[in-house]
Image 1 (cartoon, protein in one colour):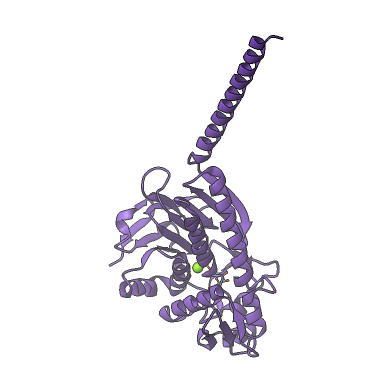
Image 2 (cartoon, rainbow, N blue to C red):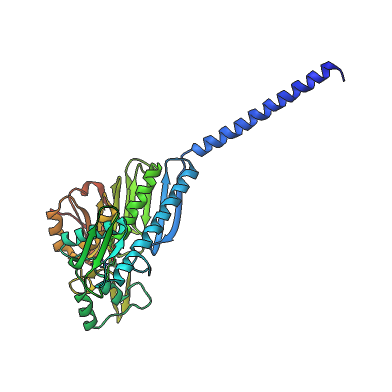
Length: 365
Ligand code: AMP
Ligand code: MG
C-alpha cells in the first residue's frame, strides 16, 4: 500500500465520522423539537370514589404526563388524610378518638377542618362537617343503605355540632383536632373533593403546566387558556336528565365549577327516593325545593362547601344568602319538573347561556 492510499483511507474515515456525527446531531435535534412541541395530555383514573380526569398542556408531552402523574399522587396522598372511609386516615383517627383525646394532624387536614368550620358558621349549619353519624346511619351509596328508625335518627342528630370540634396549633407544624363528644364523626364529603382539586391544580401550576382542566367527578377546576379561545365553556348537568345532558353552558377562566344535586347519589325504598345530601336539622335527606346548585368560585373547596349548603337551604333561604353575599356566583335549579326554573346571580348571568329552552330563566335580584 502506498502513502497516497493510506492518506485517502484516513480522509474517508474522517468524512464518515463527520457524516455519522451530523446524522446523530440531526436525530437529537428532531427529538428535542418533538419533545418541545406542546401537546395536550389526557389522563383518567378512578380515585376518591369517582372518575378523576386531568387534561393539561404547556410543556413537552413527557413533562406534562409526569406532572399529571404527580398531581394524581397528590390526590392519593390527600385522600389518605381526609377520607372517613379509610380506617387509618387522619379523619378516621379523629373520629375514633372522639370524646377521648385530641389527635395530631397534618397542616392539610387542619386547614380543611378550619375552612369547614368557617362555612358551617357562615351557612348557619346548612353545611356541617360533623354530619358523619347521619351519613353512616343511612349508608347511602353503600350496599347497606336503609331508612333508619326515628329513634336512630334522633340519636344521630344529638351527635352533630360543628362547635364541638376543637382546634389547637403550636409553633411549628403542630396541629391537633378534637371532637369533644363520644360518637361524633367528621365527614368532609361535601368539601374534600374541592380541596383536593385545588391542591392538584397548584401542583400542576408549580410544575409549569400552562393550562389544565381537572375534573374530580364533576368537581371542576380550570386554569390557563382553553383549547379554543381564552375562556373555558363548561356544560352544566341537567338535574333531571341522563348524565352528560346539559341545560346550559358557563364560560369560566381560572375558576372552579361545582354542582351538588339530588341525582348524584341515592337509593329507593318503598317507591321513595332518598338522596345523599342531608339536612343537619332533621337528620334526613334534605327536602330542598332545589334539584341542583352550581357554584363558580376561585377556590374549589369553597365552591364545594357552598353548593352543598345552598342545596340544603332551599330556594328562598339560598336566594336570601346570595343577596347577603353578592360575591358568591351561583346557579340554582328549582325542582318543578318540566317547569323547572334556572336562577342565576347577576354577576354570572352575562357568562351563562341557557341551552334547554323549556326551562324558565331568572336573574336573582
Ligand atoms: P356534595 O356532593 O358535595 O353535595 O356532598 C355530599 C356529601 O357530603 C355526602 O355524601 C355526605 O358525605 C356529606 N354531606 C351530606 N350532607 C351534608 C351537609 N349538610 N353538610 C356537610 N356534608 C354533608
Ligand atoms: Mg359539596
